[in-house]
Length: 140
Image (cartoon, rainbow, N blue to C red):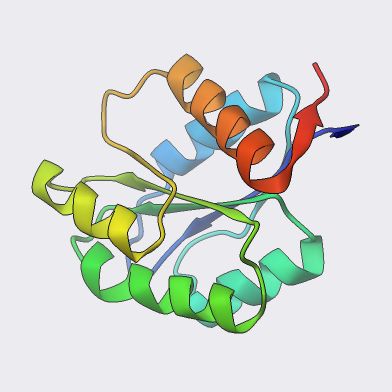
């Protein structure tokens, strides 16, 4: 296993205009030693996947509060597959009904974080997912 620093793309998917939570997560990931690229508000699935390719990220983190997660996340998953991003970890966070979590995971989302998830838990789960999916040892 090679050793490296995790690189994460944090994106706000869709028309959701609230990004405080995404910025808090981005800061926590940076504080944990990860490199973070924040794309800003109102990103399309195409913009997110294109940015992930350009930035050569290990993780795509999507924040969505609009309730459109079951409509929009499948587009991201399909584009990731089309572009060969099969080893990139995909995490989704936001206001997501618990009954939708299994649906998101079935379609290819690696982790789902709900409001109230601890920042420590987010960092730990992302680190474990990257180590497993990318076959790397994360530098501490």
